[in-house]
Amino acid sequence: SLSDRLTGALKDLRGKGRLSGADIDATCREIRLALLEADVALPVVRSFIAKIKERAKGAEVSGALNPAQQVVKIVNEELVGILGGETRRLQFAKTPPTVVMLAGLQGSGKTTLAGKLAKWLTAQGHTPLLVACDLQRPGAVSQLQIVGERAGAAVFAPHPGTSIGGGDNALGVSAADPVDVARRGVEEARTKHYDVVIVDTAGRLGIDEELMGQAAGIRDAVQPDEVLFVLDAMTGQDAVHTAESFQSGVGFTGVVLTKLDGDARGGAALSVREITGKPIMFASTGEKLEDFDVFHPDRMSSRILGMGDVLTLIEQAEQVFDQKQAEEAALKIGSGELTLEDFLEQMMAVRKMGPIGNLLGMLPGAGQMKDALAQVDDKQLDRIQAIIRGMTPEERANPKIINASRRLRIANGSGVKVSDVNQLVDRFFEARKMMTAMAGRMGMPGARSSQR
Ligand code: GDP
Ligand code: MG
Image 1 (cartoon, rainbow, N blue to C red):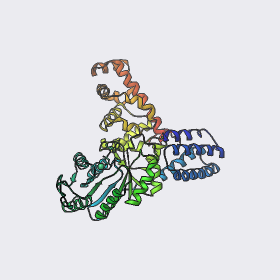
Image 2: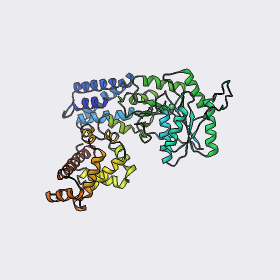
Image 3: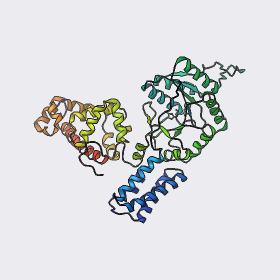
Image 4: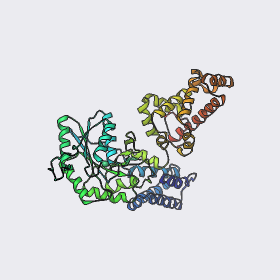
């Protein structure tokens, strides 16, 4: 993957006190290959490498930091830049409703995104209305209705078999016109006081003039505050072409990257912003409505660089247990004072957060931990929970005191074998050590030693 290649390229620099021009050239060559292999558009690769090279050579001369560390820092900064710098927030209309139109190829994830956005907006106190303007694909309207129901959001759709605006045709089949549905949807929002309208549109498998014409028609009819171009992150070199076509055909104000959970090579993410000049605003990371977040260029960059994503992890954890608790946990992790009580709390929180797999990708060193954690199923979590509950508060706070006789008592009390207790205690100390080391590397608050 791109992450592995980049990490590899930068690893070669580690331990070098001084970088020669040849070192920099070799590293840049590796980075260039990694980017091209990940389907990053050629002009983007060129300008990226040129910037890295220039800054890296300057770094060598200044010599203030370890030059190898500086190159990593430069690559990170340039990646963040290429991904759009700061996160851009959704622009709301001064007078509601705010109209958000979704555009993109068929299968890019527009309808799913409509539900995700609706849920996300509702959580922030908004009242979104979904408008079904994909009248092309059979089943598209009912798909949006299902998605809307899951998200707890209202859906405006033409009634099946009823003719709206377009007049009856001979067969009496719906002759609804998507432009008209869009217009009426916004009207509906205005009269019924929905404050955001999300317009789902049709897509084709490829670029198509009729499709562009229809999207442009909808755009003109509803004057959206935001047009979000939805792009499947797994599209390779095609992504650039598609983005350019939508930019000239419809125009858009922001990009949403979907399917970032898949085997995305990262090329689309790195190209689209640079090529279109439009910010990536949201990221979709799965089929479920929760698999969605605001796009953070800095986090994406550290993920690409294989540094993990502690921030996103903490943010997700916050949804389940409150911020203060999270800060305390982070502090304790950093200083190596994590207790079994915290361990249990975190485990419960992780469990509530859903698929452990999604979380794993965000952890530094996820590769090694994945195997270990993949084997932990719900049953084991239950057992771990039972064991910790069988301990005294003192034992939970200070696991070092859990000697042989205590282990026997705990095992008997929680109905497990002594070996299970041993395993848990061992695993806890191991995890604490690993997390403390990680926190140090990530420069987390309270970290005992910073290796930076
Ligand atoms: P549309 O044609 O643009 O409306 O695309 P859909 O919303 O119908 O999505 C097409 C397929 O991609 C569906 O099977 C979705 O469940 C799936 N999908 C959408 N977003 C994601 C995502 O972020 N990750 C994954 N893995 N699948 C997604
Ligand atoms: Mg759709």
